Image (cartoon, rainbow, N blue to C red; front, side):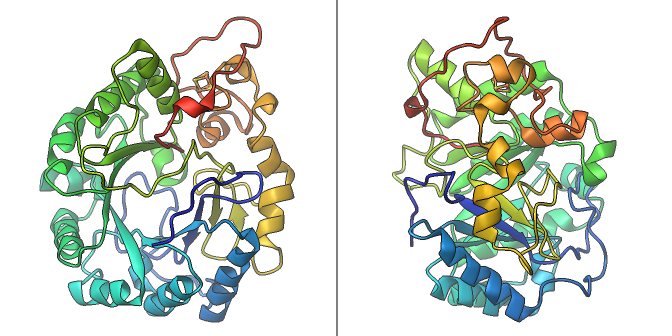
Length: 375
Ligand code: SF4
């Protein structure tokens, strides 16, 4: 498996996520994409999908991880052809199927044979009642368990994604115990951004967020899999602070020697990360729907490297408010998606952080001490 290492995020992303379709049979309460029942006729076609994969060669020598998401990517009948084309192009390909009956064992086996390297499934509750209430479809939990069983039977490295919101917060400790039952590669905690259908949900408070991050740090010291956060880069601050306080490795997953597919340093919206939606629009993140070009007409590499939105997102000195004064602005920088959702400004402070910098700009901490990724 190709394993990208030292990536210059000004030149290339670590992760390229493509929303292959917005169609999905679920109606999850937090859905970023506000997924729809039928496939949009404007979706990228199969030849356009191949052209997008060809475009990723422009990031060479870096080889971004290529994640196929949705909606439910299983709704595309050409999915195996896309996986094979990307695999043959030298990319590491991951898939995030929805918890529906469309992800059969036979189809997952076909995708594995085509070159799929990882599968990531969403699990937002430790039991059918809590998970299905969040996904708003009875049976989603059972389908998710079947996908997990298939992934393990096929020896596909498994990632579990769990949303952190006020609705899921009471179940997080039980979730931590549940995910530890599987031989995971990675547990990813997705901190809610109030966009799409998620705009109607409640986030955790900054204090609750801090408590979750410390619990994740504690867990990372004992479990045999990696732990990362999405849209809570404050985790990098917590890792730094806890490691400085002594005792921790900041690594997680160290006990098995199993190497998680994770970024060599903090990945953020537009900083090591780029999102392409189902009609080809290029955005810094799926949670940050600022369109900066379209892969049908624009060079993905040029947009990523030079578009003003992307270059500002990678510039810690462009940050405003307390994030702009914070000594963790390089290794954290706050969730740009949450700042945008809350204020309409991509450089505003992340409201989900308890850290209070002083009144003047603080000197930066050294990023070398960190190894766990987040975005
Ligand atoms: S103030 Fe901003 S940059 Fe500093 S740790 Fe909090 S979110 Fe990160």
